[in-house]
Image (cartoon, rainbow, N blue to C red; front, top):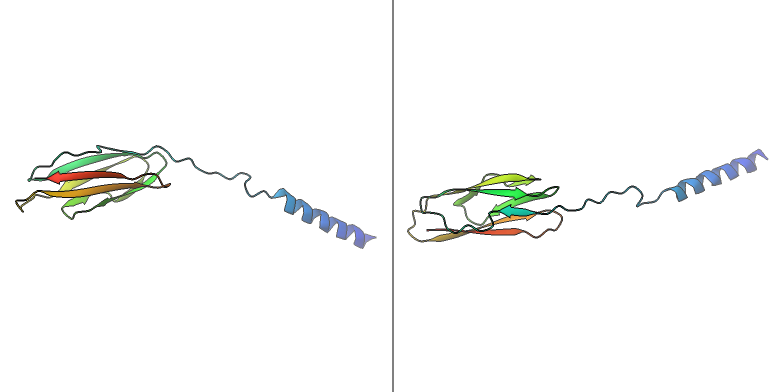
Length: 120
């Protein structure tokens, strides 16, 4: 009789454990924040160079920044949440105009922001 009660207790505990676990119960799936970069357009930079400050509004998103040109340097290549990034534009001694593309990529598969910089 003790053996039957023991087997029933084991079966009952096993059923309780298996049926009480729901994979979606308590799961948290974050909702991506809005993402923006200001300014989104830079008309032109003088041949003497200079600095441009980008303001990134990212909420709960992570982000990273890439420059297509070595003469346009990024102060902070990655971060999360809201932040500021300074672009340092070197002096143009070539005598011809040049172009750099800065791309700011957010996480959560949000669309990236492309900023084109023209220097005389």
